[in-house]
Image (spheres, rainbow, N blue to C red):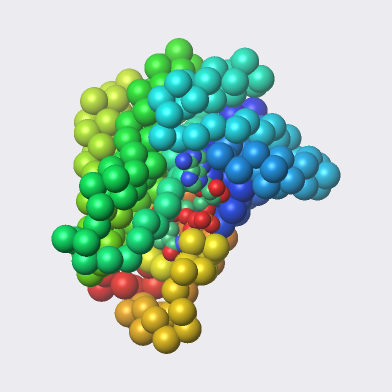
Length: 245
Ligand code: NAI
């Protein structure tokens, strides 16, 4: 990963944090972005303290101008953009479809799906200038199946898979690979809304018998970003302890 520039959104916590740390450990220059400025700065400082090359940039992924500025920042700081991980997301409330407010539905779609469109829209031109690139969009197992109570989230995550496939169809011949990753339930702050009873019911849906770890998702993202995955594009990769089996 030496001389590679990587953007990771939602890098203050969970999967994004583990991903940014892993890329930095492999020698990449990492731009960590999050809406939570204080936390993302703390994660960035820690990477630097450990000898990594990292900068932070506050951006709300649901705001197109901020996604554009994030890409401009990365290119200005490191000269080019090689890899982007569109990871930031929210779970939204768990509730039956007809109780979901229009505002809540739109908010989850804005943060989890529209954000990926904005990412692709600004990251791809920067990568075209560089002659190559790899984009990894974080979907979910709910990008492949539904989950009662999660209509907006599942719709957004299915959309992320569709957008990734379409971007791959349009830009793979120009040397830009685009893939989607579908984590099962991963033990991050996102799951803190679940009480213990529900947690054990959900664990039982994973044949491996536990929740995943952020680091286990980060390993797949690193591989997809690297040249080792040079023939992989337009794919959806579950990393789910067997959930979809
Ligand atoms: P997390 O809650 O630990 O981290 C999400 C990060 O995104 C936070 O730092 C938060 O500040 C940031 N964020 C939220 N809204 C933002 C916005 N509008 N702009 C910029 N940053 C924003 O969550 P986790 O679990 O690490 O999730 C990361 C991704 O993985 C999300 O897209 C999530 O949907 C997906 N995922 C998570 C699963 C899980 O079980 N934890 C399962 C499947 C997918």
